[in-house]
Length: 171
Image 1 (spheres, rainbow, N blue to C red):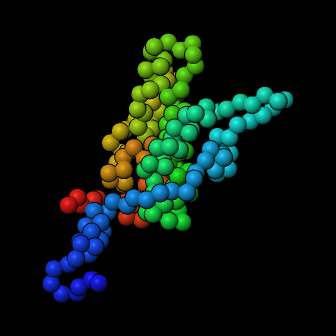
Image 2 (spheres, rainbow, N blue to C red):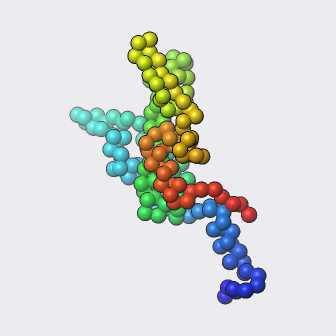
């Protein structure tokens, strides 16, 4: 039985440390490719005349589902967990799409597609010009910079901040 006076017992110490650390672990329910496609049909496969095409290879999406499963814990996000899984995956899949080139691309085209773009701050049509400001990314979601690169990331970061995804204290 826990003591209210004197030295805390081991279970009380563990509870205090766990609460202070803000590290939440646990297992998640299964989140599958079909769950992602149901929430984000724009990424779902399309079948026309018995030919199925994919905007993004299902193996790539599964890679991001696996990453989300490791990072997004139901114990933290509760009823928002499925939404947060979808936002997390959609964010990374969208960033992935920004870097895709075709098999005939030159090295310069592959490098250009893989460059971080930041937020567009200006553009021109005559003599083609575009300006990006990487500094704007972190201004209103401090510490969540890369999540501002997509609307999905912004939604994920906003809910994460509300649900206490803040700093941790390691004992």
